[in-house]
Amino acid sequence: MAKIFDSRCVLAVRDLEVSTRYYVDILGFRKDPINGEGWSFLTRDSFRVMLGECVNERPAGELGNHSYFAYWNVEGVDELYREVVAKGAIVSSAPTNKPWGLREFGLSTPDGHRIVCGEVF
Image (cartoon, rainbow, N blue to C red; front, side, top):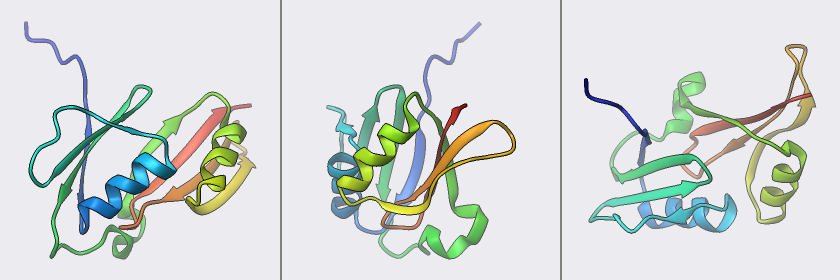
């Protein structure tokens, strides 16, 4: 039987250069060697994402709750928060202990894709 051994989120972005710089410089991703025309393949730890340039598409930020694309389970959520804030991340919510047992904070990308980062407390 075939085996799925990895996955990547795929996101449409309006300006590939701006979005790639945000992921690399602000969120701490690295560019993978398989980048191609109109695409950026990026990795941080075990999270992988493909950014595809779609200049005329509606920005994710206009989609309300449909703009959420990832939940990152992290170790050291407060440390990650301090790291990305110091680099200029777009923060939608500060770290907060939630009633469901997770400490979470929210981020946005230049196109308005939303990410929640959480850690069990």
